[in-house]
Image 1 (spheres, rainbow, N blue to C red):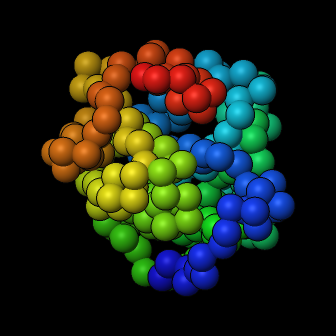
Image 2 (image 1 turned 90 degrees about the vertical axis):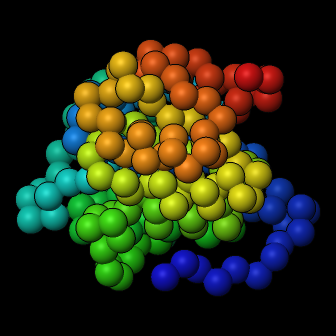
Length: 208
């Protein structure tokens, strides 16, 4: 279930230090390698928060935060709930919980039903981000099987956000990227090694 949010004025959003943009990644099979490469190419000064849904086995402890921390200069944390998004920080959805973000940038977790057989679900995160950030939402779909994220990128695009999808040649598993591309909402379909540079341009205000 998505959060029900009352509109906030620009002055109120500035007062709580709301970032202009938020980047959300979705990945499944092959996602660790894909996330590692993109995040390793982003500097510690990256000007936007990063939210990540990686499909993981909910019955085992996740070491994703520890692994990614060794591969990127960004701060990496697994969300427990109640954190506020911050630039230069990667927030990971824990196994078995959907990740949501409110308009004031506070993260929350939900154990509602699986979406596209997944919890956490990219569709849930992307829809939450679209509702909260409108045109400041940037959704990135990386390697993975299945179709999770396809409905979510539609939500992001419908609110004026940006959709980036990993291309087939560089994706270890093309199910999720292909499903996202088939929605017709992708602004750019990119090789893995080009995604970080485009994210830098977008978040620094350049034209891509």
